[in-house]
Length: 368
Image (cartoon, rainbow, N blue to C red; front, side, top):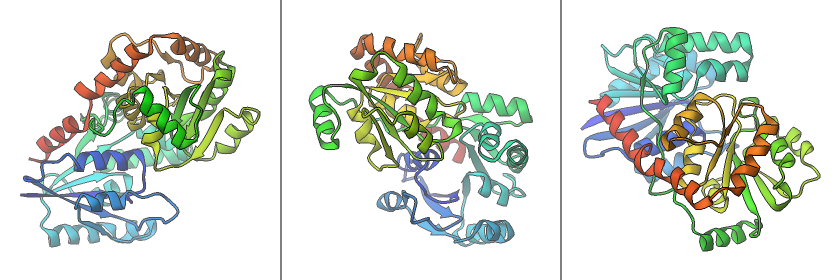
C-alpha cells in the first residue's frame, strides 16, 4: 500500500480544502493510505474541516509552525516526517508547502503539487501588484522540479504561457452523491427551516466578499433587475467588502448576508439560481456545487467559468466581468426561461463529466 502525504497550511474550510476532502474521500483505500500534515495549527476563529477528515479515518499531524518558523525550519521538519513515516508520494496544496520543498525533486521522491487558481491574478489582487508578482514568480519556481497539476485547462494555459511551466490538468470535482436537486416539496421544507421566503425566486452567491470575487456587481445587478421585488438574494461568505455590500443594499430586506456558514449545501438546495461574478478563478468548487444541486448558473465571462458551462453546449447565461446592466438583464432573462430544462442541463455536467470520482481516478494514476 502506498503512503500519500498531503501537505497543507491548515484545514481551514476553503475551496482547496473542500477539494482535498473530495479527493481523499474518493481514493481507493485498498491501494493508497492518505496522511495529512498541516504546517500550522488550526485557527479557532476559522471554521475547520479537521473533524470531517478525522471522521474519514485519516491520520492528521501538524508541525505547529508559525509562518516565520515554517520558512526557517519547515523543510527539515517535513523531510524528517517523510523519512519517519516512510512516505511514497507527497502531494502539496499551497504556496507554503511548495516553497518549503522547492529543492526536493520528483527524482528523489514522487512530489506532486496542485495549483488551484491563476496564482498571478490571485496574488496580485490579494497582495498588490509588486508583492503579488514576486510571490507568483517564487511559487512557479518552487514547482519546477515537481509534477505540477492545474485544476483547470484555463489555469494551465495561462500559467504555462506566462511562466513557461509544464502543468498537467486534472479538473477539481465534487461528490455527485452528496449534491442533489431538491424537488419542490423538499425545497419548501428547507426554506421553512432556514426562515427563507417560500413564495419568491431565490438567487444565491457563495464566496469570499473580496475584490477578486466582485460581490458588489452581483448585489447591484440584482437590485437593478426587474425581478428584484419578487425575488431574494442570499450572500454567503465574509470579507472586507461586506460593509460596502450591506450599505449598497441597506433598503432591501430581500437581500440576506449570512457570513460564513457550515450549511452552504442547505442554502444551495433552498435556492433556485446561482450567480458568480468573479474576475478570476481556478475551477470554482462553489459553481460545481450549485450545478450539482441543479441550479442554473449565471457566470461572469472568465475562462474557468467557460470551461464549466462549455460542457452544456450553447449556454447563454454569462456576462462580461463587472457588467452590472448586462447581469441585470440576464437575471431577468434567466428567470423567464424553462427552469426544469436548465436545471437538468447543469446537473448532467456533474453526473457525467466533472465529479470527485473522475478527479480521484486521475490523481491515482499520477500516484502510481
